Amino acid sequence: MINIYEVTETNQMIEQANLDVRTITLGISLLDCVDTNLDRLNRKIYDRITTKARNLVRTAKEIEADYGIPIVNQRISVTPIALVGAAACKRPEDFVTIAETLDRAAKEVGASFIGGYSALVSKGMTEADELLIRSIPAALACTEIVCSSVNVGSTRTGINMDAVRLMGETIRKTAEATRENSCLGCAKLVVFCNAPDDNPFMAGAFHGVTEADAVINVGVSGPGVVKAALEKVRGQDFEVLCETIKKTAFKITRVGQLVAQEASRRLGIPFGIIDLSLAPTPAVGDSVAEILEEIGLESAGAPGTTAALALLNDQVKKGGVMASSYVGGLSGAFIPVSEDQGMIDAVEAGALSIEKLEAMTCVCSVGLDMIAIPGDTPASSISGIIADEAAIGMVNQKTTAVRVIPVAGKKVGDTVEFGGLLGHAPVMRVSPFSCEDMIRRGGRIPAPIHSFKN
Image (cartoon, rainbow, N blue to C red; front, side, top):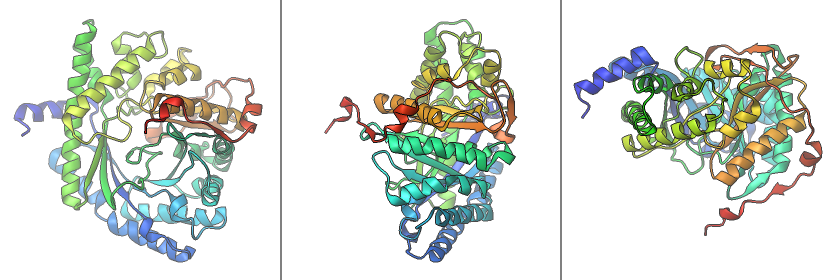
């Protein structure tokens, strides 16, 4: 039972420290929509989404009103479209029609975003996988709320370098296709290694083939809550620091668990997981970077940053798993640049570079996220960045990802405005030294030795 003290404490976290449930994400399997006829396929997909998700937004609003807990987004994830469309799609343009259907269906039910315009190619690409990837620039240019992801590697299979090369080119083409809108298409495109099947956060959400017919996944947040808690133990030792983070993460996750169970009950759809990631926003006081500074850094990026982030990530997970038996997704701390005012300040102060961010991704939840880079960055350099992150994920048996935005016409030091939760970002320097000969090799980087666990 939740007592009156917990209720009061939760209200304070909501009112004073930006606590929210970042998303209720409804995962929907589209496998029974598969058809060899493209028109029938699109019709089945539209009907399936609008039927299953028809009460999603209304239910979220009711829970928000009943419990006073802000629920920022209501999202949908679907089975990777490369699988769903394989029988009917013979050209990239065929896949684009499915993206338009996803966009239309998600808007019809009032969802914030829909994810799953995806391909899983960690070991190799089918013809359909490659067609979908080549369709991404056009698909993201002609839709508003569709999100795309491609998984190019895993600890068990290695890294598909052909896919890595293709994704570098695809990101450049997506930027060009959406250049009139600050190259925003790239903000809806993420490249993964070890992508989870149950991630509720965009742009990487898709409904994995191991999942049930439909499932409710909830992503909580609350970096402001953690920062406020740490302010009360300023100057105390690491034992107190860790206990404070852990207890705070427990409380945050309890809120998510309540919302998830209520959504599941009211919608009649099984509860999947709680993702207890600390997901920042551009709002003042809602920053992971500011938590790192509260731990004792002058700025994110200073010596000690990776250690502080490792501590934060570990304690968040330890607290969260005590509050829910079903913790999944990514879970930990996100370090996006454009969505975190503290990270933006660190970049502008010269304290934070892409190289330091890469080091931090060894211990954070995901990877290089929402980073603006010069528009003339070569596709091979983007592929090299993807390969580096995939290698970190593969060797360390963790999820890593790249969401970079080569902003057309922008150079290092310029700023690009994305708006809303996506915030704004300073354009960051990318190493001018080439990796083109390496990327051009193609083939596959083998799985590491510790992948053999049978």
